[in-house]
Length: 320
Image (cartoon, rainbow, N blue to C red; front, side, top):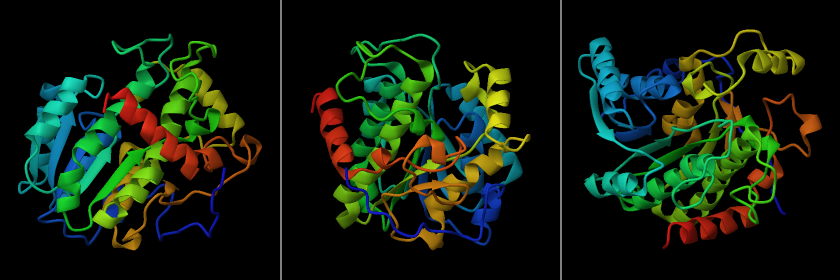
């Protein structure tokens, strides 16, 4: 495992900056963006900020009725906002293929935001894959690779891959992706999928840099959203206190800030294959004892060999 450690990138923004603060002064007119999972949580605020600064934003959602309500709300706050809603179920390969086939023209920004977290029991997809890995990683992998030509057709496209500090709990278990031998644990499975999201950024940047596409992973921070519907909130609060985390969690707009920063800020022009948190690049740590559970990135989540292997495995799982 070889990870090159350099001085982490910093910006003028921080843990509690909002999406609109990091996008202040930017004119995104003419840019086209897709935000998955934009019918709730930080996906809504990511889309709202992008549209509010002039981008044409597609809300890629499972529940199109909820998506239309979000689109109407965004338009109510910004009359000139250009927002459209399209169906996308990342756990359904036919749905992903239909979204890709229906896309026309260049794509400047893809925010792989949707996800499922900490399913209490092992649930396998029709293809025999663990659901969190299949949805959080493989569905987004199929979407991003399917939209590669559209991204390459844009001038300096970017992809934002939402990871999590939960990646510190588990590397990608290449020999047991579906927990056939390793005892299933909700957060191990979630952590594996979030490691995969970070590794995707590493290998996609390597493969797509000549196309002018930059791909980075993002840890949005602790935000109370529907993503935690399977999580014991009291246990989560205790864990945060034990880790010395602030009592107040981030607002959805604060949680969206790092995604928006990485997606559109001129400060990160040409930067790819990195892992960002709290509007700055995370520090590579050697073990969980060096982290408060919310910060830092594991070497295995940035390792180029792991990233290349995951890409090959993902292609095989998709039957390519």
